[in-house]
Image 1: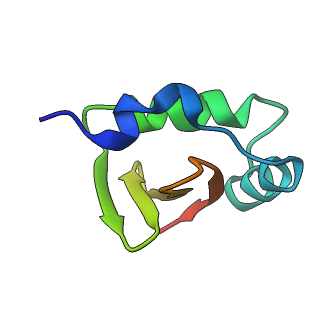
Image 2: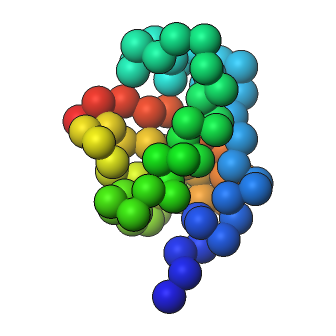
Length: 79
């Protein structure tokens, strides 16, 4: 069964504040954080679960939080 989050991968985006927050939380340099998050979501080791209004993707010691209705990446932080 395909995951709804993966089926809507093209809709995933974030805000400028989200980009700054993700870079700060993970110590990422000047990279495309949306592309980075999409790559992590597609990783076969990713554990994807929906809780309430958000999707949570657990991968490589990080948690990516995505709003389930707008597909906005809210944050990403280390577990």
